[in-house]
Length: 322
Image (cartoon, rainbow, N blue to C red; front, side):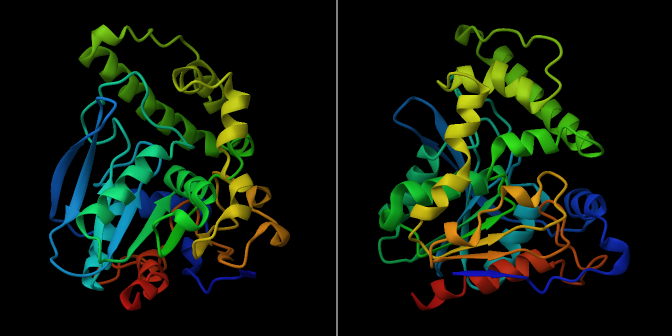
């Protein structure tokens, strides 16, 4: 059992959590990536769009993005570049409806949707049965990854996992992002969710998706009106209760790193598990600074490889010996 302070130390002018979050997402330079896109047809009639590394050797690392993210997100490009340079082969899974084309079903994805994570991990093993497999999840994808690890125990199919800024208590996170400056992020993310939903209504009128009501200006309201009923939950409270990852940490049996900045503007430290909730295979790293999926040390390293990407490579090194 370990709860350690990480050695992330940004320049003084990058110690603001909002600057960390915005700089990493919108301003920090990231290299272009070159991956192979595949459309994976699913048994339920829907599809997943995957981006595979073109490297021909090395252990595989599955990447699961955050809310409304995609392979062009800054953290995704940074991770793919750093992992490939270190000898890994990343495969990036787009959650349903996030690859630039609406998915075909009424349902899409949410913070606790683990079936697609399981399908992609199984696919990698089917195609590369002799290669070790790891995984990295970001934000919503990190929450879902922890839930998957807890659900599957020793049968996760992963040698190691890394989770970055998971919203482990969804109700607390919905409260936090609905206050103060954090409402700027809420407004931005809800705008993307509205856009994705309306794009699906236009693309598939046969689904008869209802028009979004006015005033869905918080995650509490959007998830109660849209996410929960579409995915079979009784209401937003049922959704948040069932899908919060913290309750699944105790049954994780895969070696897992949990990275969380104590100044994350999306959450508060109260979402983190206590020491007695952590199994011996889970190590929690809680630097004082970093924002939400930020962890930028300074303006722009010459190779564009930021602290977070280097940390991922370091933590995934056991895959090289597996």
